[in-house]
Length: 276
Image: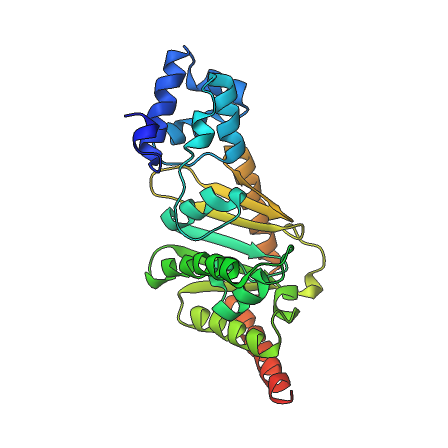
């Protein structure tokens, strides 16, 4: 089956990549060198387990001289809207058996309330229309559905104290957001840890990172900065991210102490809101 027959399918996309690679007389390793991708990533794409990034698809088209086939028929989820660099990470998030996320400045999207998410999404540039904002919000909120299953995935959330102190959306929104995190932590659905300002510099200070593990494929790491993000799959790089996360956890407050701090800050926001 050619990908033209089923353009939304990662399976048919992978089959087409394997067919064209073999027709070009290339092994996965040889293609990985020419397309500047890892051999493992190419293997996962061919097996239908992964979605290539837009840049990956363009390099595959160039190396295999396909006339833009792999870019044109790049599989998409077809729901809502997310940044191009986050699309594959979003799919993998739904397949993960364990997720460990660190938020340096904002509550990670998986844990955001609707009001908090709306405040974050409305702050972008250029300004978004109400329709665009609603479309983004739908996708953001749907991510939280993976928490409806109490046992899977196992989620650890590590926050810099700045996340708790930054009044995104105002006191009322922050109170609701922090109470949501406390509820998830108290119910043992997630583990919550805070890196206090007193910890000073720590291993994850430079930016957001999300680590994901799976039943039938190697772990990955997703890192993100301003207007950009990248899925990391090369084993030594992923292990380095895992090690940095472990080091930062060593500087963090315990689960119970973290929840106590978040409750206290939520109460401060509630008091501030009542005085408005």
